[in-house]
Length: 209
Image (cartoon, rainbow, N blue to C red):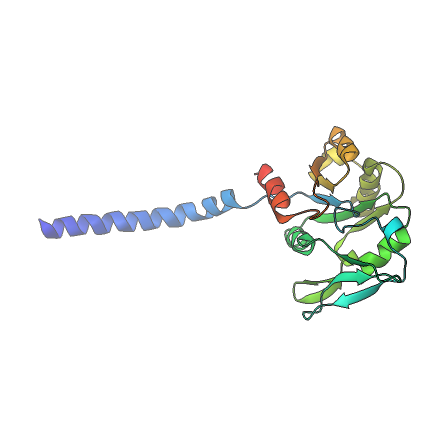
């Protein structure tokens, strides 16, 4: 009787193991995090804690860290601007998962913003690259973020249909919530001390799943 019991237990274990092999691919597929097709980022007080057109006097100099990254720049007057803590991690995660990245800024000083994007450096997949190189398109000008995103889509995909794709905008200005009328998800960056955070980003990703 004892031997029969052992055989039954072993049979159950074998069937359970086979069942796991059958279900595992489907479980992995169902639990895989979904990402947007396009993620758009404002710059001032979303990526870095300043208005580049009023706070900074070029030229800008980098302060390089021991790992080769540049998270802080210094302007001609000695004013330092350190990029928000989670920005590199967020952009890297999006890019590794196939999301197209857009920067969209209303700044009156795009030349300064471009210099900042060129000067900040991060380690992406073992290589030190400029912050600007992470973006697939960069848009400028005192106009709506809808216009920014449309022009960026034209460069990336050859069309301007916002509702055709899953797109988000991380931005610190509430007025830009207007993008939602065009099917773009607005992610409100409300903390000027921390900018876009990993938690805010993860909360957004969870909303897609």
